[in-house]
Each structure stands twice: as C-alpha cells, then as structure tokens.
Image (cartoon, rainbow, N blue to C red; front, top):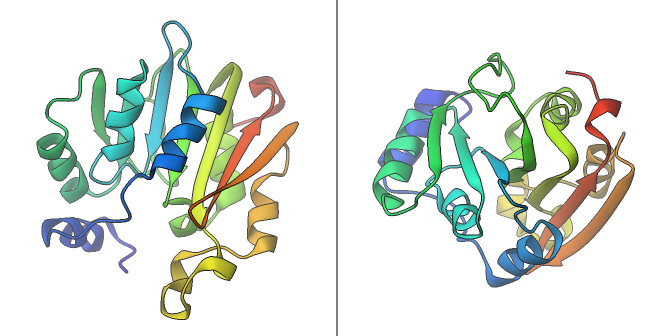
Length: 193
C-alpha cells in the first residue's frame, strides 16, 4: 500500500479500490447521521466516491476529498450521476483546509482512511472543528481482531480505536460486517484547529 499521492493514484489507476459500502454501513448512516435540511457532508479519503454518492442520495451536499488525483478521476467517472457532490484534491493532514465549506459540515466521514493518517489526533481535531453544532464525525475502519493477518496493516487495534474518541462527548461504536463504526459527537467549539 502506498503512502504518497502518486502511489495512491497508481493504486486507483490500476483499477483497484477498496471494500464496497455495505448495507449495514448504509443503515447506520440513515439511523445515526440523517441529513438535516441543508445538510453538508465531508467524505475524507473518498477514493472512488461511493460513500460520497451515497451521502448525496440521502440529501447531503457533499465534498469528497482525496489527496490522490487518480482516486478523484475514478470518482468523477464512476459517480457521474451523483448530484450535489464536489470533488476536491486535498491532503487533510498537510494542506490548509481553506477550500472546504466555510460554514462547516453536519457530517464528516473517514471510511477506510483513518489508518493511513499519521497524526490522527491532530487531523481529527482539525476536522471536528469543521463540524456544525450537533454535527457528527463517523469513522469506519477495519479492526485487527476481525482482519486476516496479511491485511492487518490496514486495520486498527483496540488502543488505536480508543484514542480516536478522545475529546468527544458522545461516543457510540457499532459493528458493520466486521468493520468498527465510531459515531462521535461533541460541540465543535470544544475543539481547536
């Protein structure tokens, strides 16, 4: 698995991707992060755009961001029918976030991407600071205990999962076909970028 934008672009240019969005994940979005009137969502590490397109179908206006242009080329092509999605090439760990929605988001999603972020605590604080009042941050990730040994490098252990919840007032954890789904809430004002 690559770590640079060029390596990730090659991953997507070769036709590879990641696990498809499952029915249980979709149900959890509907139940725990329904789109409010005028709702905005941010899909971090959007890859081929499947999650961004699904969130748009729920009524969100979505910013799908990825730091690999190859991912965004695929997302634009594969999700061409999705309305209300803006695709942005952005590295949330290193770039400034000026291109993101000025008025914030009701939902921020990191699906199958948080494991690749080196400074997770700082990035999550930056993203949580973008949440509107009442907003939710959802992290979906493989867990070491439910992942085959040869794939554990893309999974988090229980200590890493627990660290992701620091600073949030409300933490809920669900299982979606072997993936951990963390639903994190806390007043955006309690976080600083």
